[in-house]
Image (cartoon, rainbow, N blue to C red; front, side, top):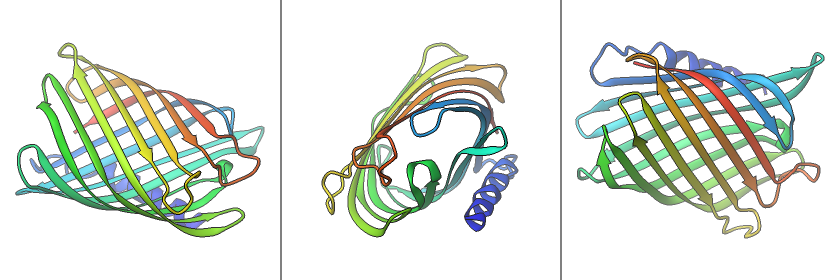
Length: 238
C-alpha cells in the first residue's frame, strides 16, 4: 500500500510543477477541506492535480488525487487515484482515447482497482468562453483487489460533462458517470458531481463541489452503498 501511495504523491508533485510556461502544457491543482459521510465521516484535507500536454492533434493527461484523514490519531479515511490518458482528435468535435488508472479506497473495501479504458469523446457544444458539453463512451476492463477477493470485470463506461460560464469569473459544472458491469450485473457504479467556481484572478479560484459515489454492490459487507463529499477548495490553473 505504501508503494501505491508513493506513486500517487509523485504524480501529484509532477503535475503541480509541470512546465506551464510552455504553450502546450496546462496544469490545474486544488487543495481544500472535505466533509464526508457514508463509509467514513470526518473532516480532512484533500489534494488533486492534473496536467495536460498537447502536441498537434494528440493530448496526454496525467492526473491524481489523495485524501487522508485521522480521528484522534486513528486513520479514518484513505482514498487515492492516479491515471494516464492518451487522446487523439479526429475532428473538431470527435476524438478517441485510451487510458490506464489505478485507485484505492480502504474504507470502501478497495485495496487497488486497475482500470483500462478505450473509447470515444464527442462534443455536443464547444464554446470555451460560454458553454461546453460533451459525452464519452467506451469499454473498460477492471482488475479489482478487494479485502475479500481479487477479480477481473468486463465493464462499459458512459460519462457526460457540462460546464457553463455565467460571467467572466463564475462558472458551474455538472458531470455524471455510469459504469455497468457485464461480468457481475449487480455491481454497477454511478458517480456525479456538481460544482461552482469563482475566480479570484487569472490563476486562482475558489471551488465548491458536492460529489456522490454510489456502488450497487460494495466490495465489503460492512461498506455502505453511497459516499458523499462536500468540498471547498482553492484551485490554481497555469
